[in-house]
Amino acid sequence: MRRYGKHTDEDDIRSRPNRKGNRPRTNIRPKHEDAAEGMVLTVDRGRLTCLVEDRVVMAMKARELGRKAAVVGDRVALVGDLSGAKDTLARIVRIEERTSVLRRTADDDDPYERVVVANADQLAIVTALADPEPRPRLIDRCLVAAFDGGLEPLLVMTKSDLASPDKLLELYGALDIPYVVTSREELESGGAADRVRAHLDGKITAFVGHSGVGKTTLVNALVPEERRRMTGHVNAVTGRGRHTTTSALALPLTGAGGWVVDTPGVRSFGLAHVDPSRVIHAFPDLEPGTEGCPRACSHDEPDCALDAWVEEGHADPARLYSLRRLLATRERTEGD
Ligand SMILES: Nc1nc2c(ncn2[C@@H]2O[C@H](COP(=O)(O)OP(=O)(O)OP(=O)(O)O)[C@@H](O)[C@H]2O)c(=O)[nH]1
Ligand SMILES: [Mg+2]
Ligand SMILES: [Zn+2]
Image (tube, rainbow, N blue to C red; front, side):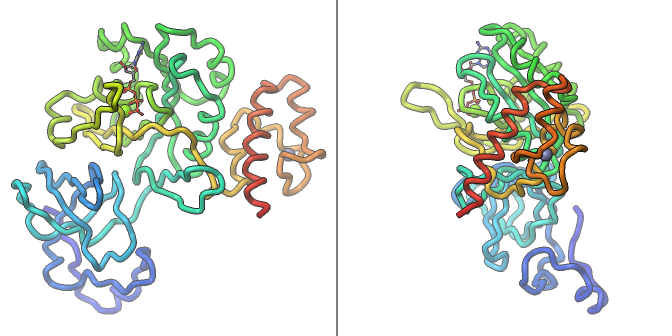
């Protein structure tokens, strides 16, 4: 068990950067020296399911953490009953510094940003080729969130048994972003899991996308049943008898390691928290064309060099249209 909080020197404590807000560090009390390291697997109304060594431990946040919330993927320090026995409850006394943060707002005006997952290395943006129809705007927004949050994107196109991936590949194939296309048959044969799996080893990958695109189906194909049962997590069944995911859930991969994080389907992916000047980074196919732009170009103004550059055939005009649309919705909300 890794131990925390063994400070011998007062100066050392004071000089450490305090990234947990403005509160003084309170974790120097002796009992926290026994804190164990854990990872948050899922959160349900203040109850956090954590993995501590190989035990699933239920926990709640200690009061001293204040308003800071622990989210799925967080590395936390826990004290109290860590046995994982039924009806026991441990306390989370510290949230470790995050290596990445995937944020989202409900829409572009929403001042309330939620952290979807912490510490993920990769964002698997899942799109069905049909049922539901692909929505390139949502893909673009997820790409922006990935670049902004420090996650590598991976495109997963499901249900190729229902429609061809050609149109989407025309748009996104040129982006130098890894992608996988899967079908019902390949899910059943195990081929889909194998090909997705090749992109996941050793990484923490969050799966996001519209409801019904097949995120949970894919995650279930990737993670053996015993592992899923480990969390005792049961998804709600909707009135139509469909299983829809209601909260994010992290599951460990076997073999080369890594984690997959299933998340609830989204209708929109608000980007109120993203600086508009950073949006262009999610359009790597267009970015080289901005070299001729005036200084501090918004890329949505008459002098922008992208129009001429795209006209010369360097990129798909549909991509420039996507960029402009995204920038326009972002700007409208910036104005007021
Ligand atoms: N035809 C076809 N159907 C699929 C495929 N993958 C998943 N489905 C079906 O799509 C439906 C929705 O799948 P889910 O895995 O629940 O979708 P989800 O993205 O987790 O949805 P939410 O949890 O609501 O966000 C299910 O009926 C799956 O059986 C596929 O490759 N082809
Ligand atoms: Mg689901
Ligand atoms: Zn420009």
